[in-house]
Image 1 (cartoon, rainbow, N blue to C red):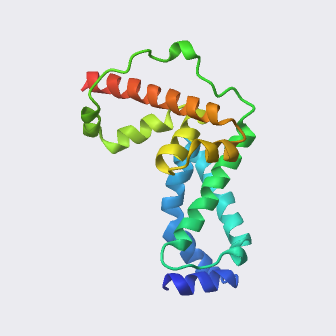
Image 2: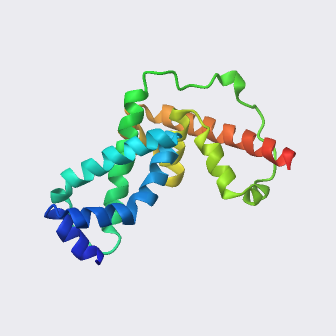
Length: 180
């Protein structure tokens, strides 16, 4: 079933089309959920809730050509993950500033030698707030103003959390490089 037909049939509530939609995109959307939540079990719950939201709101989707479906699905799943993180926000997500390294050492060209799976694990290990801002800024290419609006924080908090996330990542990368 091509993407256009899939969209039409999902819009009509066709369960076979919904199953195909899930099978086609669940893996990619699960990766997004894991990237934001940092926990596979939580990510599965977020993915499930996200798909329920997708199926309920399919009538609001307007197909605009190849890739628009994936972009819409991604946006819904990111919002679902952010909603989960907002609910969880009552817990302390800050890292004590004294734990952050003062000096960032190392040659950035050497970072390209780190396997992607290791880098993704380092991102997963960041505190929730840092990981969320890092994902939105670096991977989703959002600006601090947009991130601030999405998360209900100030632009300064967004830029501060991004800086701290990058600093922690550099420390983890430097530690990793020393071990290999």
